[in-house]
Image (tube, rainbow, N blue to C red; front, side, top):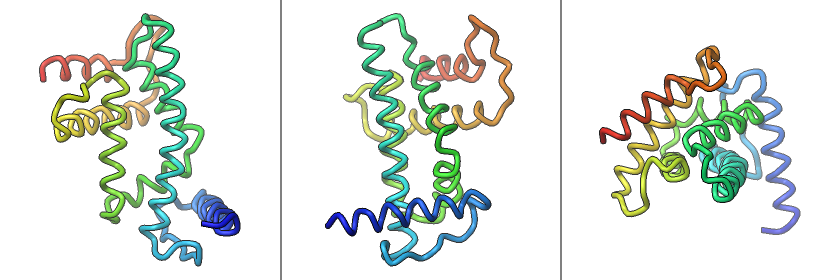
Length: 170
């Protein structure tokens, strides 16, 4: 890919996100930079992955220096902050994920990344199990993100408490 191609693709993604602010679930525009809507979604997901994994990496580096950090809380917070800072990008991916099968392997990889980063699964476990745990964790994150915050200082989020019980019983 040439620098011209790179900038064309970047500008196309920025344009899609600017238009999607009004209606993230609306039809995906066509772009000469991408062959089809699935290619566009894969590029958007790649952008999302860079943002999320960058933040997760920072959290994991902090946790390595400070073992008192609760990984589930820290990874949950990192995910929520990434969503909050990239609302339109996240909303477009969420709105179109079920319709484009080409995106599904990346979504499952994201679920595994969340499960492993939060310490809810180990790398030696079967891939299907890690994906299942990550999917449950992600669902709880989404559900908690949609609920008004009732968190009090010193208390864990009830969804996170439930997740800890479910994972411990698995």
